Length: 115
Length: 242
Ligand SMILES: Nc1nc2c(ncn2[C@@H]2O[C@H](COP(=O)(O)OP(=O)(O)OP(=O)(O)O)[C@@H](O)[C@H]2O)c(=O)[nH]1
Ligand SMILES: [Mg+2]
Ligand SMILES: [Zn+2]
Image (cartoon, rainbow over all chains, first blue to last red; front, side):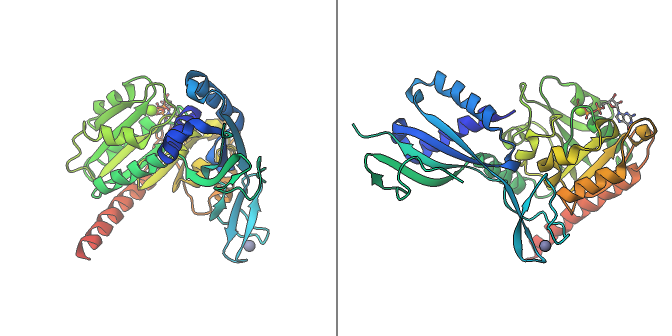
């Protein structure tokens, strides 16, 4: 599994975007579509392992939000939810135009209280 | 869906003493960047990322393909393996230009590894470059390697429920090869059922049933490859004219 690659990428991305302020981050939220193959438990474990070894981040918390899969039907011209990986609209047409479910991003960053 | 731990109006503002920044910082984007650099570099080569579970027959198929197409195409292979050099040796034994990418226990190949490997293999004149991914239906699906096509093998011994279990793999593949068809009489596996399931995940996926051992469907596979190489060369010529 590549959870550890993702966790490293989380910190690289945060450092790239926020610079030294990263040390003031209290909590981050990662949004992962069901198709991104990210298991919340596994990423939480990888995250805990990472912060345990990087003391500057020791108090940081992670929340993982999982997004359902949503696809778009060309015929009905509207989105439909994909259940059990069946990319078929209620009207019967197949569609693999995914509008939600592939994503993997940091969706929220909460900074520590100013002292 | 998301629960806001501080004030909902807090995007980028200080509310009380907690600052909450609602943002969209995409992850694993570095890989896509490198993948596009590979695409730039390999404009004259048709690149095929070959994926499957461990042991579905990737190396055997590429050995055979290399032999059969020896007079038609110039083929090179990059082989990913967690630990060993074996598969690249198997390729060279049948005269195919091959380089092993030892991933050091990693479960997938990343674009960066391909870019580095390209400095160590001479692909001058290569029409078709196969990348044999690490045997795994999960992680490789998330990593674009700069390929033109992704081909996923599913052996008849693995069960016909895999497209729904590993949807992202089949969603991102252009072709599914149902391999080891010679074993169909001995295993509970329905080619029709697996094709139906794969098309529910990806309506555009092509399906070819093959047995490398008994030489079934291999001509169709080779024709598919020759067509894709031809298309790549034509699109390249058109781009040059413009
Ligand atoms: N019955 C049958 N066996 C096959 C066929 N193709 C390959 N095999 C056997 O399947 C086993 C695995 O084949 P490989 O080609 O090494 O599979 P692979 O996908 O490269 O394996 P990894 O690289 O380890 O993931 C070998 O014992 C092959 O002889 C086939 O068409 N029919
Ligand atoms: Mg192999
Ligand atoms: Zn519809």
